[in-house]
Image (cartoon, rainbow, N blue to C red; front, side, top):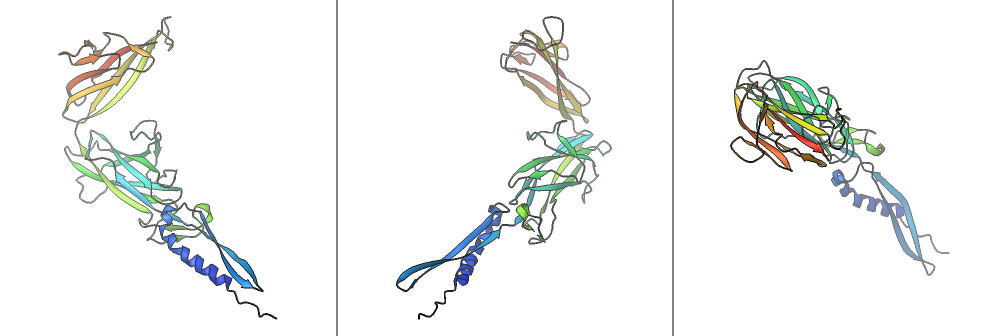
Amino acid sequence: MLAPLNIRVPLIGLAVAIAALPQLARAEGVRAGTLISNTASASYDSGGARQTVSSNEVQIRVDELLDVAVASQDSAPVPSGGTGVLTFRVTNSGNGPEAFVPTANSAVAGNPFDPAVVTLVVDSNGDGIYNEGDAAVANGGTTGLLDSDAFVTVFVVLDTASAPDGQTARVELTARAQTGTGTPGTVFAGQGDGGGDAVAGGSGADDIAAGAVVTSVASVVLQKSATIADPFGGSEPVPGAVVTFQIVAQISGSGSITDLAITDAIPATTTYRSGSLRLDGTGLTDAADADGGQASASGIAVQVGTAQAGSNPTVLFDVVID
């Protein structure tokens, strides 16, 4: 009778599993919750026949790495004539979906004054521009879930009305993973995407960046509106109706700005009405000449020039709905 063969399949399976372990060091590139599975096999001769046996399957669930990067999007101090808006980008650099908690701090050491943090605003439509329709969140609120490698723009709205003239102040924005923060390697058991653990990555699951505002410098906010006059004496946007666009440049702060230029494109399915371009109620010619106004079928451009803080240069022009 043949003696039973001592085939140590589990050890072979263990060796395969150990060989796969170095891949875990690159887990930031593998989606959290991914199952890494492996089954070993062994072949042998017995009784003149080739036999094959398989091991049990070993499964490893990839944990979620919590990582974040924060960067200021302002290349220079932002002018603030009472209200300043700083722009930051918060990027989920982990390997699973995570919500982040942004917190603004204006009491930075060395500041000549500390701007008041009015609110934080998340860029809802992703255009990178601060709009009234964007979602305001409390200082220390949440961005909502961001997928791996996704980012969101966060605006920090500041009140600088009582600040001294010509002073520059730094403001810091910190973003931390909602799941938790800690030294790299800190484990949050069972809190990872897919049911595994969450682990603080190289950033410690939080990051910080700084921007700056400079006070009492004139700045511009554009407000655009439209009124409609239809062919029947009403205000319905029907073909043939005249749409009057009004663009108001609100100059705030102190001092003045120079080389102010206002441009706008003629909307598709409308036609510019010749001779309708005006600046502060004064008609401008459509041709490129000394009055600084220019208009064509594609758009309008008005060179306002120098404007004092507190003024509101206003451009109007008409289009007809085709």
